[in-house]
Length: 256
Length: 192
Image (cartoon, rainbow over all chains, first blue to last red):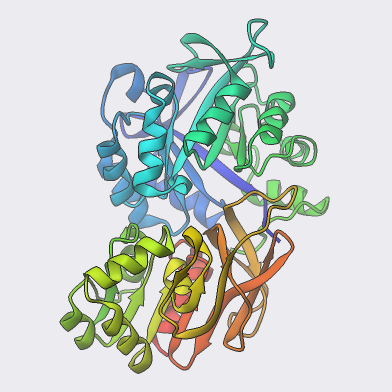
C-alpha cells in the first residue's frame, strides 16, 4: 500500500539550517548535509529544503549545497526558494534534486509552472502556497507571498486548481496561521485543497507532536506531512512519529 | 565499466550518484560503441514512452539496447522498464522494444487514488527481500507477466514492480532513490 510520507523541512540561511516562528527569530540548528543524512538514516521519506531568505534578498539558490545533499542521501528531496527561471530549475535538477518548489514566483508568473512541467515533468514541479484565513475570498483562505509579507487577494482553492491545470504535480499547503505554532496542522484548508485537486497534497505548518500527523492523515486527506521544529528541537524522532501513525493503521514505511 | 544510457529521457544524476555510493564506475553515454563495450548497462528513464522511443530511434539506440539486454547484465528503471514491454497505452498508444511480452496501461481513475502514484509502496514477491517499500513515481503500470518477480498494488490494480529474465532486471520503482534498501538491490544487480 502507498504509504503516507513524513517530510522534514530544513530552512537554510547562509548555508545553515535555521528555524524561526513566522519567519522571525531564526535560530541556528546545524549543517544542512549532516542533518539531511541524520534524517534520512532516521526514517524520513523525503526532505525539503527552503532557502528562506533567497526570495526576499533576490539571491540565487545555493547549488553547491544541493549537490552536497544529493551526494550524501539516497532519498528524494525538493528544493525551494531563489528559483526565478526554468534555467534555475534545470540547475537544481541536474544537481540531483528530485523536485522544485515554486511559491511567490508562481504567483507572479504562473507560466513558470507550465514551463517547468513541460521541461521536466509534472512530478518535478511542486507548488508551495502560504494561505491565511481571510474574509476576502470564497474559500475563506487567501494566498500570501514572499514569506507572508504580501497579501494577494487570490483564493487558495482556486489557485491550487489553476496550478494543477498548469502542470503542478504536488501541492504543499503551508498554513500561515499554524506555521511555527506546534499546535497542529490547519485541517480545514488542507482538506479543502486535497478534495479540490487530483495531485498529492502535503500538509505543512503546525506539527508539534506525533498525534498532529495522525490527525492530518485521518481527517484532512493529506498524502504527506511536513515536520520541522518538533524534530529539530529533539522533542520527537521520526521513528516516534511513524510508530504513532503505524499504531493506528495509517500506511507507514517502517523499515529503512 | 557500467554504461548508463542517456537518451534524453530525464535526469541521470541520481542514478550516477547511487552507483558512485557503491563504488561502481559508470559512464553516461549515448554512444552504441561504448554501450557494446560496457560490462553492464543501466537503462533509466522518466517522462513519456512515445518521446523516449523517438529519441532511441533518432540516436540509433534501438538495436544496441536490444543487444545489450540480450547479452549482458542489464537494468531498466521506471520508464526504462516500461519500454522493454511490447506496447504502452501512453499518448494514444506506442509500440515499444518488445523485449518483455506484455502491455503498459494507465492507472484507472479511482476515488482516493491520485495519479501519478508518488511515494513509497510495498513490493512483494521473490525478486526482492521481504515486503519492503521502494520509491515510485508513475502514471502508467506494466501488467503482471511470467517474468514478474515483484508485485505492487495501487488504485485497485496489481502490477509489475520488478521483472527478471536471466541477467536482465528491470523495476518500476527507483532503486537509486529508495534509501538503503534500494542501494542493496543495486549492489545485488552489480554482482549478478
